[in-house]
Image (cartoon, rainbow, N blue to C red; front, side, top):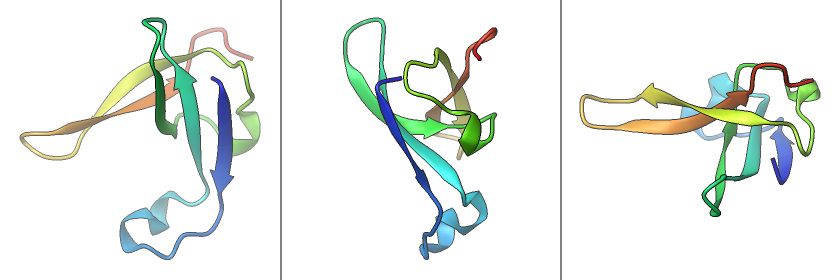
Length: 75
């Protein structure tokens, strides 16, 4: 993970239930850098350089979003 921030306040209705949540820049092995969310751990457990892996959340019959979780063995 290249960088991240923890969002602790958001008045937009779709995000209220997520607070606090982590927005991160993740460097993919293929080269691109991607803005995403880190899920599956508490915001205080996230750190720069932490290895992560993709997971996908289905949001409709036609779409899903890529999120990232700590990789197995990540501190």
